Length: 240
Ligand SMILES: *Cc1c(COP(=O)(O)O)cnc(C)c1O
Image (cartoon, rainbow, N blue to C red):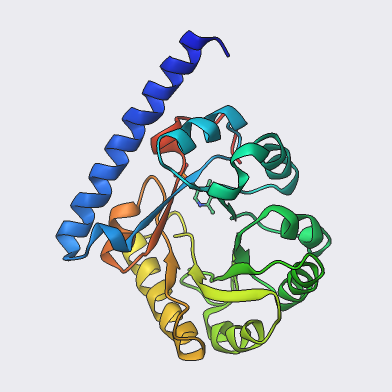
């Protein structure tokens, strides 16, 4: 990019960040919570590595991707700042991609099957890494649907099993509020699932909930981490 284009993009991202940080502050104030309890993760899927570089300069060190190949390329092209970034995997993950993801992800938020956790564990061990994992919980009102995450009834047993796997650190839960639907209902369910996980591992305090459209409701229901793409980086070229 030209110097001018970079300056313009930096300004755009800085403005989006400012707005989102205000929203987080207001939501924390309304919930009587400290802003220090909520981590902002910027979802950089579909956006170029140069945006991640700008985010890093602006102090955003947690970034999230949803596709292995795209993420791997960005991580590789940003090797110089690798150690100060925390890369999150938030997309649905096939078991056969576990080895690759274990090479770049610091946090895998989308663990929704035990065989996936097993594969991540084996890869983390062979790479001599420890990966933080979140259990993705289905927030569908109908527990039989089980779209995008494990059924809530299975959270306790899956947490037990995951907590015993070497190379993984069970850190909490992740959820996406279904649309249509009231995000308040969804995030209340996620909070219950988080309690079930904390019965297994008390340090597993992360509740990853809230996107550009519903971060306020997520924070009201105890989210410790929000995943924001569009409100900071702008419209994505396609649904990712
Ligand atoms: C894309 C994505 C986000 C970010 O969504 P925005 O509406 O752009 O903030 C958050 N979480 C997951 C799981 C996503 O796939």
